[in-house]
Length: 274
Image (cartoon, rainbow, N blue to C red; front, side, top):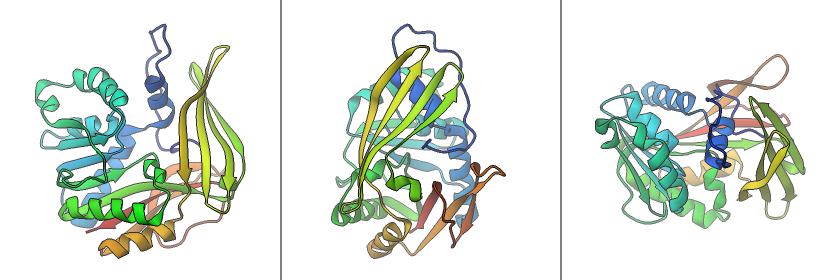
């Protein structure tokens, strides 16, 4: 499964001789402009004004944080992650290309999202299903509590989620892009624990790079997560469901709804209001 079917862009041809995993990850998986447009539109829809401060939990290289400060001169972003390697990549490859004033408004911090004292923001996000690393209800609740406490009065928490009957199978989904092929590999699913192991592979020319990224996750349901959000104090939660094209693939348009569709694979956003 791809991260999302929304508005992917293929960047310029990679000029480096060495394999740059973050370069190919961003080309295959991320759609930063589309994500930021959705975040802005949703916040304005629900709160009637613009969000100015964003916290990107599990930020990796901080691509969304960078896009956020580029979008508006009044915006500030904080990116949190435990792994310094992708953050250093983001600083040298993304933040370094910003103007001096933009650089002052984006902050990548090596910090655990379960720790106290998270930056206070209007909008907190957990994208690319990163929070699936939390496998117990107690830990997920602790994370949501921390998010709730760190939001401003009119704050929103937005996370993406995927599911569908195909998620219970061992599958390899292959997507061809200009200059490379992207593989989303689900190796197993345990119905007792709802845990599954995923890999991302890339093939460039005749060379395949195996297990470039590994994800050891629990697959959560929308209903489970909404219940936990309610338990920690969020007053409302909304579901934005992706529509489908004529051939049954995702169309990149997310609409608020209270009724989903039983299908092989689906992607949605959960939006929680403080």
